[in-house]
Length: 198
Image (cartoon, rainbow, N blue to C red; front, side, top):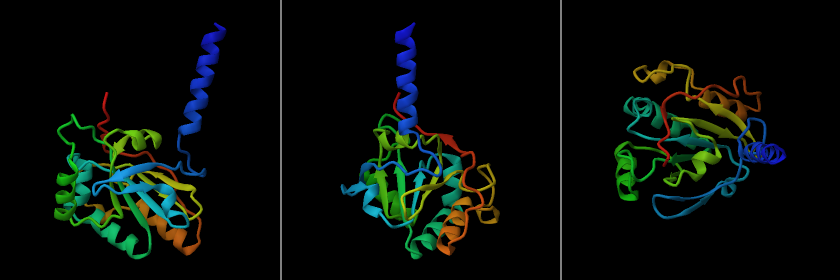
């Protein structure tokens, strides 16, 4: 009985150690982008960082890109000095997996304006951040604190016009830039489940 209690306590401690939490420092990570460059979250100290969990084959993600809303948001925020990291955690055995070459073509075809597309096919970053859906969005402030986590907007369906929705990421970033409090810091992410390896 004592062993079971110790094991459960250790598991709870490990979970709390790795779980991301709004208002606390965002865990650092290391990944490789689709051009082979090593990316560390800590490379972007003193900058606002947006992290997007991505899978274009998910209708919810696809809708954001098909309408051009996600690219417009990327351009707008990147022009303001924001770092945008796209994290693709689809495992290589899944039909939605993109090789680096396929990802580079998709990035160009979709006219994405991101700082880096990170190949997280191991699922290491996705699991570290407890990414559950595509999209699943994170905003980190200039001090490295996670200040927003959740849905991209307030219309959780794959057919809406994202431009008519309240975009939580835009709201959070604009509040940071204006030195104002973030009104909505956490929402329930919506979309397809992340296709991690079993």
